[in-house]
Length: 480
Image (cartoon, rainbow, N blue to C red; front, side):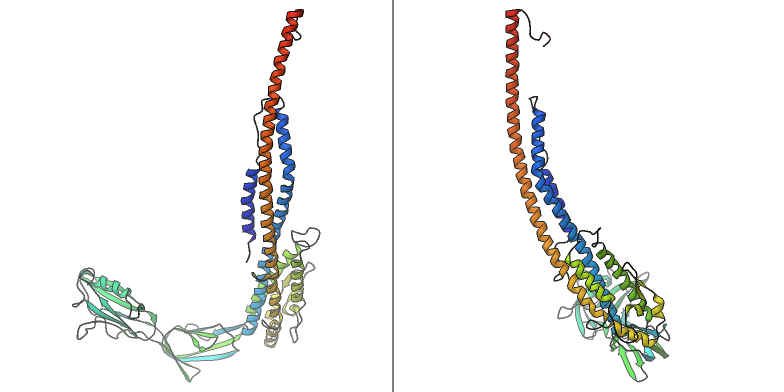
């Protein structure tokens, strides 16, 4: 997206400070009786010269306001487009919700396009757990007691193997734990295990090593010397898979308790092992999902409608007469007037009504009262990205796209206009500053000349008075 309204405002503020500094009034300390008049001449000249700058600043303020208003509209347009897209996605998935007959044992989550149906899960003989072993012996001091006679051990996890080399300083329980946590195989891949020291009592420390992921695997730590003595409890807790039967005849074995690769679009969550379990997972349309999505759509439509109306009429905002406003209005009218076929043919059939001011309202009881067939018809009405109400999202996207949209095109144009205006403002302000400096110097010189003439006038007056006194015996101004 191009320059935002906030960055434009920041640039304008920065330039305004520069302009203010350039246009700051200049004064001089006058010595003549006319210095205040000369200062007024300077101030008035600058005020007149500033008129074009003030006009440019007003024009630029209007441009920044337009960009801000367009940015707000762009966000709301894209939000409403997203709402329509979400309605289409909901329609494609038929707003399915998974319900378990025994949620303490199995739950499920719908995350794809499925059809209403029921799945059965039974014979849950085990659930996935991570391999976790401890050292076969305890050690008196975790920081000093030697753990490996040879100083070299071999760590194995599944198909990965790493050689653990201990020095005289690290050949202890804590050093071994640290080495395991940083171990890599021959290809440089980290071994996904976590080792720690467990203190069971005085002089009784053990090493605990656990795989970072669940599932049946091989976890061993042995001496590298001939014979390879086991350092960990052997095969005591080598992890487990989740094992159950789907629909009475499909055996499922997974290293995780969340299984999403058996039924595309559906995740089974196995919570506990129970060989006698017989759990039904029912997939059915959930009208509350549709009500919630429609409520969001209505709220966002009203937000955009209010923003559009604020730019129309006698009290219109900065975008009065802007073509983008009329294009947004047209796209919104297409949404309101969209007609489908079947049991659900319009937004009103979904409980959405329009006020005299163009605002939507939703009666959620309408959706909750729809029959199963009507709900399916509602999904058909909503459609997808290529058909139905949801396909109208593309009209909004053409307007609000942050790169190629109509609104962004206008924003880009206004950004350039702002830059041009800022350049003109700075240029004229610089010229005025220079003019003010030159005029200040000229007026200061004039003031100095006037002061000199005033001084000469005073001297002349004094001389004439002296001559009058000496010649005629009086002063023209005895009190002068």
